[in-house]
Length: 499
Image (tube, rainbow, N blue to C red; front, side, top):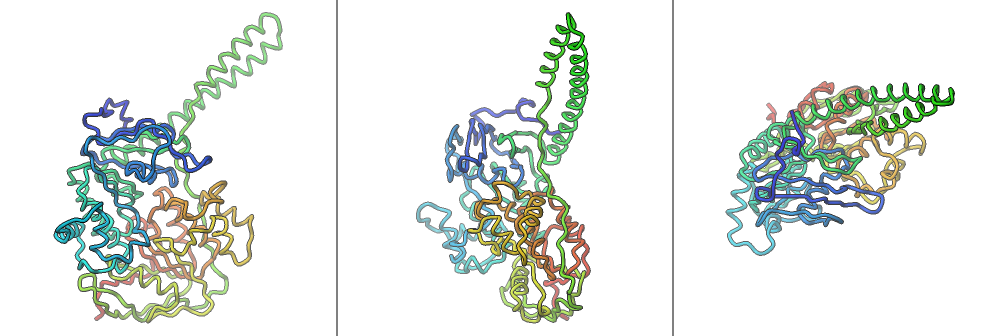
């Protein structure tokens, strides 16, 4: 069973701690607190998961560690000589035009001699092979995820920070990463929504409570913590129910005695004092991560008989980087769900993007069919728009009341609606993207890694909505547990050579 580190007596002291937060507070503006006197300590060599609801501040914790952000109060302390490197979620747009060599040179503050063998060695670690003059943007999303990891590893850090490292990775990539983390001799902090991945190596958990803005530290694996939180909520609810009953009984008796007058009023006063004491004992039950509400992605009533036909696809050989054409015989109608399969680098995202634009060679979309496109890097969203503008802008007939109802189902309410898309966490951007699909009501749904960045609590709800979607759907996902929950009518394996 997972236990609070302090309860278990394993709080770390300064001698073996590589990192300590001492009463650290941080806010994004006056009305957006993230941390309130956050305190925890990480021992050398530990593998720790950073957990919390979308928007709780997990990535902010990493930026405080790397000193990209500074605390408003308290101290972030590293052990003597401890070096830190972070593998971010995505490669910034301004780095995608760089060559491999230029990209890795940015991992160092000054000029590095003999960097070529270092690049080769670290690419070998992440199971990626490419010439050093290849441009970063030519790599697939999964290959870019490996580059991000390699850019941190090449620094040989004492403390490795991994922010959603499994996003875009295929099964082989996730297995390779899991083995690496297990064998990594130094300290590693990981943010991820992939429960199976986390549970394979986690020794402790930092839980960020989005409501209290505190950090709770636990010893144990990932599932141990989930079980502990669930059990604690049940215990607290039972205790509160018992107290509430006793409080009401005492209030009723106090009112009764007060009406009797005389000495009975003293009895009533004493009972009211007892009520106040019991009310103080009521536990503020953890408002655990909220889950998005069940939803339906509606479809137009006038869908044609054939929505999408695919006679051939252009794919890229991940090893030779040479294109080839693969024949296909796919005719997609209403309620037809297609799964695209293939390793990182074969061209899945490129194909989906071309389909969404309507210019994929060998593919044809029926005239008038509206395409809903969920892109893994959220580049279909205008980061300068507010959430309100982004949602109301995709509606054919703007209806603010309906839009806000849909938005609330995706936990997009209050101040979040006023924020620019670019200010949201990656998980919140994903929820905006799904809310837009509901409001768009597409006839053809194209989804590129829709589980990326999404809180695992939301995934069963999303999977059910996709399973019930009645238009034509093309899906790419490397998460088998997610795909298993969705009706798939046909699979197109891009790695299968045409006969």
